[in-house]
Image (cartoon, rainbow, N blue to C red; front, side, top):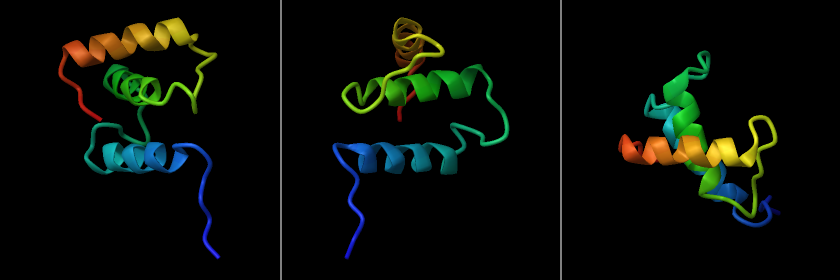
Length: 73
């Protein structure tokens, strides 16, 4: 028996794990760089994830800045 998450959560967690392992997101420090990476990642999964704090609009704006800076997740 295997656990299989609904929707695309497995892909989200794989990409999150990869970003932490690559040093893009440091597990102990929530800085601007980490927020931009997480925003990019979260906006890649609009059906699975919704941000409330910060609001979705702020997350999308931060993701746009991350995209402009070339942050890939």
